[in-house]
Image (cartoon, rainbow, N blue to C red; front, side):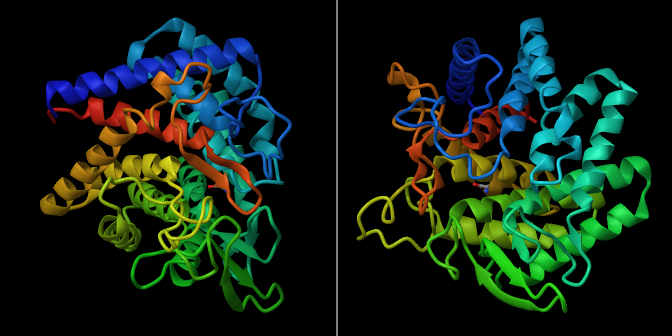
Length: 373
Ligand code: GLY
């Protein structure tokens, strides 16, 4: 990676630190989800409470990069505020919450209490398993499987490995296979949701909440799948998961627009007015960039590794400057502009979203960390 790129990414990370520090100061102990007109604090609907680990997770990333004790203190404080979520049965997002907070904290300290919190959170998530359909159900209902859960199931594999628990491993493996067979299409694109007959476990249909159509390719869902299967491969060594991530990557690479930032849905009709038409989703780009860097490290093909890494860096180059980086927008509280949360509900459309900021920070940190390797 050349010096100019390292300098740009470092400047973006410094800006990210400033934005997070300012948000902490303005809204102490508040976990933002999405902005409204660039402001994190508002009375907008949460839809579901799933993003606390991203805000605290950025604080851990800043501490890891700078060794600044103030970031560690903030990271520990915000992580503690999430501890009670280890037994939260209402969300399917415990991986997002705990792998980005208690895992780095445990890795830093070796503290067994933190280790046990991670394992408990993994066991809690596994309780969402629906035996007849062989999947972990989404927060929507027992009959609903989300592609997003692929980024959370690594917490169950982690707990299975740490506790040497075959039952947790069975559940996580079955979930990955059901998602592959029901939500991942043969061209590598993904559906957002699958609906099952609860009694028989029969798969009924693909569906969506945040994508354009039931049969479309919601960009963020594809990014969740690409990165989720890559993580699951890392935790299990199962090539069947690497294969899914590479199929997702192949769809991503062959459908990315020329400016390297996806529209919110790969099937969006660009002739339609916003927000249904040519609305970008910077958060999908940030997640996929981090996922592609992960996949580049894991794929046995040197040629694919180069392609994945170069695409990730090309996406990060665009995100790390305006109009995506909010560096010229004084008063804008987020880091990345032009993300989308939920189009149909009109939540966080063309705004900053907490997961976009987190995965942008994660990807930049990874890219700089692996420079020259
Ligand atoms: N439901 C998680 C997401 O918005 O990606």
